[in-house]
Picture (cartoon, rainbow, N blue to C red):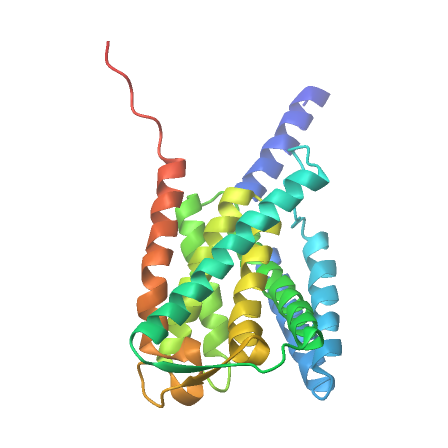
Amino acid sequence: MTKDGKDDHATSAKAGQSAGVRLDVAAWGIVLALGCRAIEIFLEAQSLAGAVGQAVLVEWGASRLGIGWSDPAVPTTSGAIARRAAMGAVVGLVAAAFVFVTLLGTRGVAVERVEHVELSILGIGLVTAALHAWRDELLLHGIALRTIGTSVSPLAGVVACGVTSAGAAAGRGDATPRSVFVAALLGIVFGALWVSDRGAWRPWAAHTAFRWASATLLSGGIVHSRLADDAWAGGNAGSLGGTAAVVALMPLAMSMLLWTARRISPPSAKEG
């Protein structure tokens, strides 16, 4: 075999590997998930330190697997990154607003103003949300998309992100059927941002904004929210464990699926 023939064979082998399902990447994902769980147990009393450790671990693992924050084939600038992150943050805030407005409009939540807004609480909440979003986006969605590669359509990749998010939620001790379904819907939203952005900046910003708004701004940061103790609002399961969250997020998730489908649809041929 000639040298050119060997090079062509090697290139074809690499292309086939990237196009097929990467079980080695999936195995790495499981190892990283177990590592995150170990950090959570070891640093249970220091939640912020644990979040930092998990984010650093997942970042290290994701970088080894070739999962990046930007498409390496596309030149990028700090301004472009800022715009991508801003677009993602808008999506996350809209998702949180959908849930809150649905609860408020159906009397599923009672709202009281906070007497004094503490900037330290808002800051710590933002940092914590950013770290958790960093971990989850790379671990649950980046690795999932890397595992399936180009073996499936982008639309199927978005659905896969919903499946991994639901699986992670189901493994929690406080999981309920509604909270698992809500996690799947959010996974679809963030997964669609992964596919469109071809990197982590947009979904990470969306995830961060959603967490910050839900867990900090609307939970004592700028207002106190008291959920009704029923299945609609979520009660002890939280605002993401009720039927209202499912109803609020379903249209957004379906819209993101349709948006993804339209992006990958071939343009119609023009007559004449």
